[in-house]
Length: 406
Image (cartoon, rainbow, N blue to C red; front, side):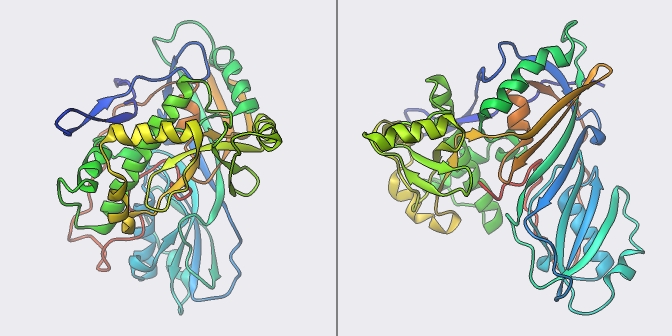
C-alpha cells in the first residue's frame, strides 16, 4: 500500500480581480530542525482518543447519556446506530465533540428517551466497530463543548524513506520543547473540508459574489473554515517573526486557567507583568476568528490583523451581514500539551498527551514531523433508504478532534 504525502494546510489568496483561489501553504519549521517523515494512522489502533467529560451524568432525567467506543466509524455513524437501537429521533441526539473515523475513540452522546429501558434495547445493538461502555440518565441534552478535552495515545511508525535514526532520538528534543513551551495552535486540514476549498467558497459568499449554501449547518461549517484560514495566516505571520509564544503591547491575551480575555496595555508595568506571565505559560496571545463582535487588539497586533483582512478582500461590514453564521471570537496562538510522555516500542514511538477542547492532535504532531497517512478508499455513503426518518443527526462533519472550543 502506498503512503501519499499528507496534504498541508491551505491559504486564501486574492488576485487583482478579487477572484479567490486556494494556494498550497509551505510548511513552516515550528519545532524541530528537520521534518522527519513518519507513518501516521497505519491502523485505527494507532490513534486512540478518550473524551474527558465536563461533568458526570446525574442518574435521572429524560435524556440518556451513552458512553461508547468506536473503531473505523465516524461519530455520526455511531450516533445513528445507537438511535436506531433506542428507536429515537437523531435530531434530539447530542455530542460534546466529534472524533475521527480512523481511530479507536471513546466518547459520550445523549439521546432524548423519557421512557423505556435503554440498556435492554442497546443489548441487541450489533454494529461492527461499536461497543457500548455505559448508560446513565441525565436531565438535559449533551451540547457541543461539554467536555474538558481529550486524551490521546498515538503510535508513530518509521517511514521507509526516513533513514536510520530512531524515532525516539529524532523526535525526543522536539517533544521536550513542546512540553516546555507548547506549539503554534494552527487549524489542521480537516477544518477546511475534504477538498480543502471551503474557506475560499465561504469568502465568496461572505462578499456577496455567490449565494451561501442553503443548508445552515453547511454554511456555518464553511464560514468557520474561512475564520480558521484567516487565523492560520495571522499565526503564520507571528511564527515568522517569532512572536507566537509572546504577548505584545496591544495584544488581546487569554488566561490559561479559565479562558478569560483581557487587553495587554501598550506600555507600563502591567505590560511587563503580562510578558512574564506569557513566559510562565499562564497567558497567551490570541489571534482573530473574525466576526461582527470579535474583540480587537491595538498597536502592532491590530495592524497585522488588519493587513490579513485587507489581503483577503473582505470588508469589515461583511461580517455584520453574516452575524447569524458566527459572531467572531479570539483563539490562543499557543497550544499547551499536558501530561505529555513518550516511549519507544521496538521501532515505533508511542506518544501520550492531553489537549483542551478545540485543539487538534495533528496540530501538535505535525509541528514535530511530517505525518504520512496510508491512502484509503472513501467511506461508503448511507443510502436514502437506510437513513433514519428523523433526518440529519447532530454531527456536521468528520474531524479528529472536537472543534467546539474554537
